[in-house]
Image (cartoon, rainbow, N blue to C red; front, top):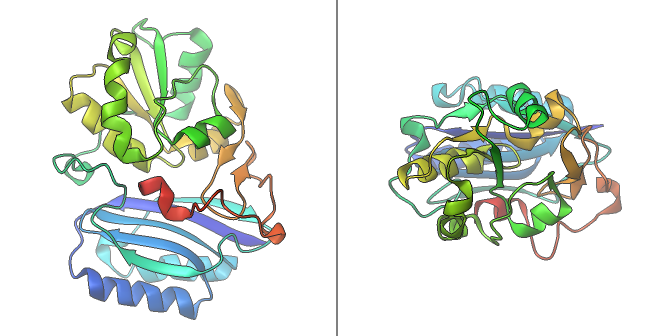
Length: 261
């Protein structure tokens, strides 16, 4: 079995070219495949390989104090879930094109999966507000699977979200707005933007859908979870619907960076 990990952290990074060279060399030496994005605002990585190689790679990253104790989401597949190993420098690790939104300066409010589960079963939050669950992922991801009754802003790239949210403002007024994405990274920026733009009572699902599946399972979810690798989609047990041995393409021209576009 191969271990697949998804990791991100918003943290100030400098000397990016030297960091890229070191991370690239470490991943290649360990035979890993996947994508690592580095930017002044942090790191976002998806890696797949032998379990011992993945753990050695994470230990290597931890030699840099800024990358120690990274929150890691793990899942498994029969074969390596990516075709190649890439470490790239970017302007943002998740592209919103809103320079004033800086998660590394302070995280937005979040809700634990267990609390959201309780709210969904009750039909309201702890203050009695009705819920509005907003999917911040791309439309094709929404169509593969999402929370029951989730709102789809209809975007094809994350950078479109600010404009797409404006028509939703009347429908969200007075409600507890819960945003979610695959592993949590997009919502780190989405909720900060929404709060700055005047949306009230907005929180993010802590850890995204991956954390929901780990801790709650399939309850309140419909369909599968699209992932940006050869597994294509995961069910609520974090098992691939299409095994990587099949060599499935990750959508029409999509790779692991598409979530950041």
